[in-house]
Length: 203
Image (cartoon, rainbow, N blue to C red; front, side, top):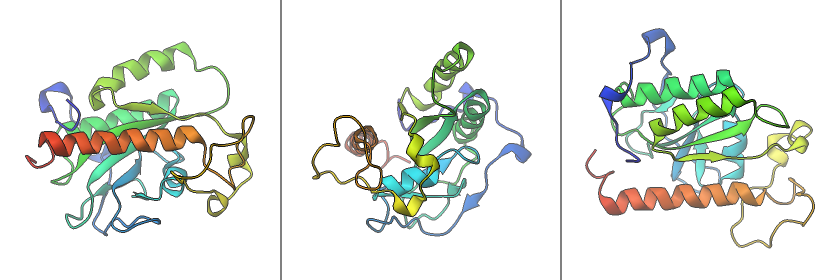
């Protein structure tokens, strides 16, 4: 079940493979405190871009959120390649093994392409192995060439009340891709469900 850890499911990563802990409060650009944090499983995982697109989120710079006074709900992000998935699996094993700060709950994994084009079959198969570690709450976001030529500050954040994006192509300086907003909405729904079922209160 999403939000629940199972230490018997995994082999704990070595001390040298564990992520650092960040004790600073998680403040989002659009609102404070953040609703959830985005944690890159490795360098270049797209966490800062997602945190820019999602006004309700904050980037932890690859660290587990350790401050109990702000959100410790974590959305992991990784590139859709073998090294990226291995890094994501390591972070998830770390969480399941109860080696993260008290209060941390992983509520999703976002996978971003490492390049445009078809995903190799071995990578797709390994994705299916990793998915159960986050109860299947895996989200995919497509490749956007324009990200290569834009600074993060130029990216428009998700605005739920704005009109739909242009039919053929999204101007990333004017609007975030619709799929990015849809993923954010699904994450918010998952968090609301965890609150309703009492999973978060039981931690």
